Structure formats: structure tokens, C-alpha cells
Length: 389
Image 1 (cartoon, rainbow, N blue to C red):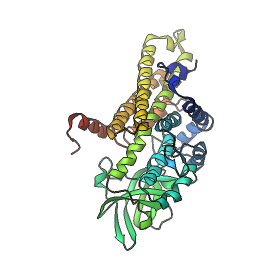
Image 2 (image 1 turned 120 degrees about the vertical axis):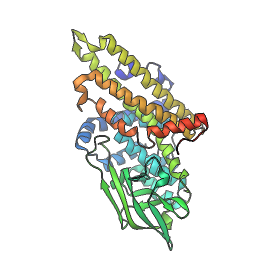
Image 3 (image 1 turned 90 degrees about the horizontal axis):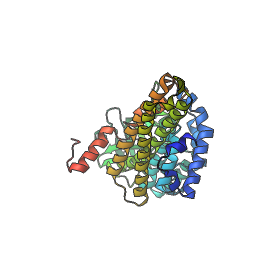
Image 4 (image 1 turned 90 degrees about the vertical axis):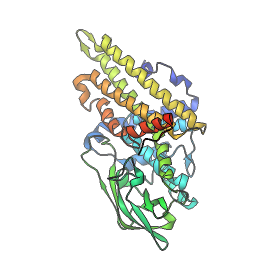
């Protein structure tokens, strides 16, 4: 049995139907053949051939795969989750490329855009020929998006956009940025195209986490945006928060893949590493760690599958997503940290994926809703009292 087989203590793979199993195997093979051999180099160098990979992800059919029409396959939410699991089992930065494209940028256009906007952007984005990003977070506005300073004012038939966005995945390589700004009519969404005068980007360097990911700052200096580029169905903060809910769902599945991969690596290592005359996997304290961590990973997978059931049934609510991100990201981070201890000194190198997963998850712990924000969402649901302000 492989490490992955042994980690499936509840035989969850037996519940996959033929289509789900084919999807899992296809994405896993792509991840193992195309991504895994290079991820160490990409992470160490802080680079990513993002445009090339976007086209390959598009050919694989995972970009916006859960959306209907416009070149999107309309897969089940649970199938999208399976794809996120297998991609993030290689690296969180790669899953971010997929989820920002499909669940933030494409979803925003699909849910809030005009027919013309959908026809113009979505088919190319589904193929990975066009790349999108999602501009909500600002240097001084993260967990409180209502305090954003980026603003847009009407000027005839156009809008004049000013401000800045920070920590934007895919920012500098994007053909279109979904940008949220204050207006006299409330928060609105705009499609800002690369090359518009006054629109500039700058990549964030010297990252310790998510190094195999493009992270950028977006700046808008009197950018003239046509009315035709405003998302007509996006009104108020409910629109960007709806897109974030969509993306957070993929995180719930993805981090379970990162934790599973870290644990599988530790399990393989412990079976080969000999101390005191036998493999360290044979010591009681090591087996206690493996038992705790394997149960934790399976609990993450059960949570993800339950959310998939709710989403496929059209019954999912924001507090369900907060439950999943709260539980699974925290659990995945703990699994990776403890799995690193099994590898000892070897665990601090990029020869093994364990600590790389852990440092990536430090970012996932705070992006798309910090752990504290999701804590308060659950607290509000439980008590009926809002503690945000």
C-alpha cells in the first residue's frame, strides 16, 4: 500500500463515483508529472511560469470548472473541490492561481457581469489564454473592506478610478483586474484592463510564504474606465464578499491536500529513517503522532465533503464556509508543523515538502478572511450577536 492508501483510514475513496475518480486521477497525474518535479525550484527561486501553467490548467479543464457556460464545464462543486485538493497537494501557490482565476475573477464576471462582458472574457479565461485577478484588499484595508479608499467618480460616460490594491494574486500578469471601489452610489466593481493609462502593477518580492505565486500591488492614477466595464449586477459589499465565499470553499478542500501530502511525506520518511536499530515509524511516540495527524486529515476531508454536499444541493451559507476555513486551515497548519518534527533536521529543507506547505499555510491562515474573522462569523452565528465592531 502507498502512503496515500494507508492514510485513507475511513475508506473515503470508496465513496467516489467513476467520474469523480477519473477527475481525481487525471488532476493528480498532471500534478505529479508536470508540477511536482518543478515546485522546489519555483519555490526556491520565487518564480512561476504562470501564463504557461494557466494555459495548461485551462486545457485540463479546471479553470472556472464549476461555472456554467461560456466555455466552462459546469462541474459539481464537489468535483471542483477534488481538483483543488490535488493541486494544493503540490503547493498552495498553484491552487491560488487556479482559484483566483476561477472563483474570484471569473466568478465575479459570471455572477455580476453583463452578457457582453461574459462573452468577451470568460471563454478565454476558461482556456487560460486570458488571466484575471481580484482587487479588494488594500494596504490599509484588509479584514474591513468597507473602509477601502479606492474610489471611482463619474465623468460623462466613464469612471475615473484612483487608489491602490495590495496582496493581489496574479496581479501583474492579468489581462483584466476585477477592482472594487467606492462610488457615490456605494461599492461597485469594475473591469480594469491591462494597458489602460494610469493602471500600473508592481510585484511583491522577498516573500517567505507562497513563493511559487505571483503577488502584486495594483495602482490606479486617474484611470479612465468605460461604463461598459462596470459590473452591472454588482452593488455594495455583498458582491465581492459573495466572490470571496466562492473562493474560500476551494480553500477548504485545498488545504486538506497540503496536509495530506505533508503527512504522506513524513510517513514515507519514518519508514526509511533508522535510529536505535529500527525505523522511527516503529516507535510509540512516532505512531502516536501519526495516529493524531491521520485522524485530523480525515476530519478535514469529511468537512470538505460535507460542504461539497451542501453546495451541490444549493444549501451552503457563509457560516458553513467559515466553519470549513476555520477548522481546515488551522488543522492543516498543525499537521504540517508536527509532520516536520518527524523529519527532524531534514524537515527544514526543501528536499521535502512539509515545511514548504507549513509556511504557505501561514498565508492561507490569514488571506480571504483571517482566522479571527471566521472565528467571529461562527461566534455571531452561535450567539446571534455581531462582535465585529
